Length: 463
Image (cartoon, rainbow, N blue to C red):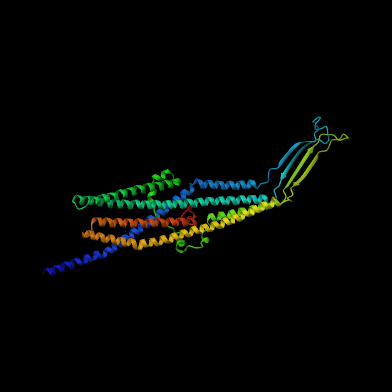
């Protein structure tokens, strides 16, 4: 009879037990999907906030505004330098007798008014204007470089701030577990089940974790202070720093990250402002060579004057007024030590500028390859953490929890498993931070912070 009663109870509870068992994976899967969606939403919001901060930093940067003013100054000065010199006015008297200083005693005496104009050699003026515009263009590229530097620096600091936020939460969880272990050890010590060194050892760990928390807060305050360079002191007390994330979205560069490998990647950064600036430097030197070649051509000057005479001729008639006209020019004949040397010097500077451009290309390609190699290694390590370490840690933690519930594992074992899992999670977040900071470095070279027109007259920088 007891056996029959047991079977009836089993049949009655079997559907419920099976329902719970089947529902657990579904509930876990739904919770995981909800957590993943929540994380993606947080990353999206952090990226949007970072975009706004970068735009604000670029638009309010005084250095960038100063460079733009310098560029405009170069253009204005180029127009001034490419203009003919002001004409020279001449006014005076000639052939005045020194015995009487009278203007009408001698027929040769005249009051002279004249004007003279100097003309530049060959096409010098146009070339000077062209050179000034090229230098102004190079200066404007410096402003673009400044914007890219700001975008990269703000992005890296934002990612670091996001990691520090995660690390602080991780440390607080670690401290909570350690404090629980301290209480457990103190209770067991009072019952004679633990030695004093067990209690002191965990208390030391608590103190070390508290020190790590204080160091984290100090470093976080330093990062926030660095960001306040662009956002002002009031930003430090706002809620914006708490929105920082150690992961951001990279939709513009994702295809690059997936397909580009270390090697010859010159084509990917040839449009970078730093390369364009080097090309402008070459163009300036080419114009300077043409300018020096104009020195072989003569420089002309024209002078016209009019002289009024009050004196009398020998026959008693009024002396006629006189007019003069002169054309002056120099003749570059002996060019060995002047013009030839100046042209050679300009050509050497041109060759130097080209070599500097080629060296810059090599250096940038080496930096890009280094970052790509770093990114590949980080991707592999992150995959290992995501697919192996973290799931294995979850399984180990679950096993220890079950063992503790069944009294086959101690509370110390449970806390140790949780602390190991927290350490693994923090290492994983650190790798994610390094990965995104590496992507920020690559975005600097691969046009990842390109401006997109999002308003009527404002250029915004976004990923």
